[in-house]
Image (cartoon, rainbow, N blue to C red; front, side):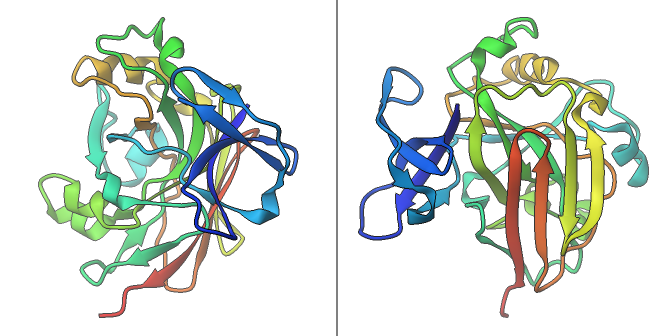
Length: 257
């Protein structure tokens, strides 16, 4: 099932959770992370705006989880997962605009597979991790690379408003074992790798992260980006596509000073 969060283009109704059937959306009633009921899919997809498909309490990201990406930035591959956080205020919807802040002259894309947590857990084992996953979505860990290089930690470089696009939906049936991830800017390929190339797989990541912090329903785990990261400029369009999962598109605009 593909889960979306959406609002009708006409009217002022509150955002709703829904599910996709072809080019139609059906509302999900009840608690998406508990008991819910799928209503008939009868609203045309063209009549809705797709929003970021969940509202996480936290966004946990994994650095240097692809060997070639670690090498391209001159870094060692971590012996244990290297984790950091992005603030929920950095979230934008599919098709929203990434804003380039004036503090940085080197904002880069980082396309990633994102795991969405489905139920609360702490000290989850890698073997049981699948039981805690609602599904998967697509993310772009937008990064001010020049600031990342000069700061002792990465909050500023990763945390600007609009630096966390994800979506367009959560796929509950997606298999993350071996899917090709591709990033294009203005149609030109920048990144391409398979999820099988991750240093630490999703189960290991969930086990490690949940040994540090309690994972809540809707929390996101950005699983790392492959090599090929590059600069985004005013007027660009960046797309992150994952085989069998979908495509996330966002335009880029420089912030007026």
